[in-house]
Length: 336
Image (cartoon, rainbow, N blue to C red; front, side, top):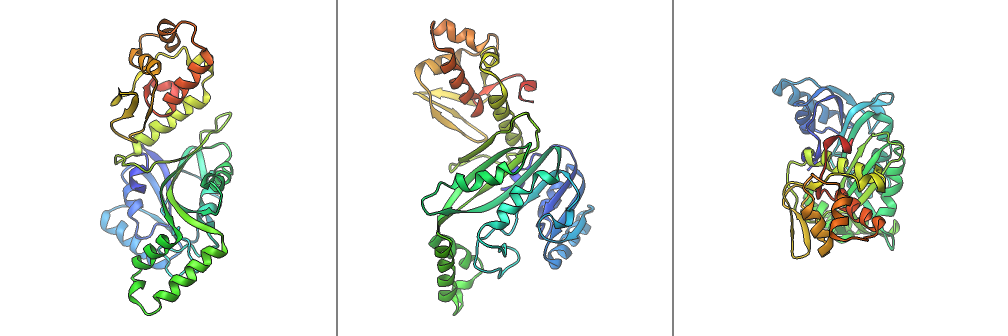
C-alpha cells in the first residue's frame, strides 16, 4: 500500500524511515536521486545494504529512531512504514513501536514538516487508537495541525476491535502456538483497557508542504476497493482539494469545467470508475449542470441557463464539493 501511494515523480532527495530490508528504498531508487534509509535495528540495515548491493543502487544507511538520524536535514520526500503496532511492550522490532499507545505514529506524523523541503511530500502508514466515546478524527487532527504550512490527508482504511487486533498480531507472530498465548492476550487486552481504547484504526497519512496562505486538513474513511498504483491519483487528489479550498465563490463560478475522465452520472448517483472510486448522491439539477459542463462555458453561466434565479452561494458550495471529490476536470494550472 505504501509503495502504491508514493507519487512517482522525480525527487532530488528522500528518506525512508524504518527501512527494514530496504524494499521502499528500492522503489524510490527509480525516481529519487539521493536516498537516506534509517532503522533502529542494525540487522535491518545489514539487509538494506545487501538489497542495495544486489540491486546496484546507493543508499545512505543510518542507525537511529524516527527523525534522530536526520535531525538537521530536510528532504523532498519522506516515506515510512514504521513499527506502528500498539502493544504493551516492544517484543519485535519489525512491528512494535516500543512507546506508549500510538505515540510512535504521533511523533512520526507530527514531526514531518520540520524535515520537508518546500513542496515536499510525506507518505506513511500508521495505527491510531479509538478512545471510548471519541471520534478518531479528534485524535489525529492535532498531529496534522502540528505541521505548519502543510496540507494533510488522513485516510482510515480499516478498524479492528481490541480483541480482533490482539488476535491478529499474536497470530502474525505465531504466539497462538505457544504456552504463553493466553497470558500474552490477557496482558494486551488489559493494556488497552488501561488506555481506555475500544478499537484500532489503520490507514495512511499524506502531507504536502504547499505553504499556502491557509492549509487544509482532510480526514476521512475509504473502506471500499480502490485502484493501484495510486501515486498519480494522490497528486490529483491534492490538486482537487487545493482548488476547492483556495478558490473564491466568485472565481469558482467562472471556471470552465468538464467531467473528469471515467466519471458517470446515473440514477441520482455520481461515481468514479477508477482511482479512488468515490461516489455519492447528486440531485437532478446538479446532474444536469454536471452533464452540460463541457469546458466551453463558465459553470455559473450553465447554471443560470438551466435554473434562472438559483442561489449562487448554494451553487458554489455544490460545485466546490464536486471538485473536491475529483468529479470535475479543469485547466491543470488552476490546481497549483
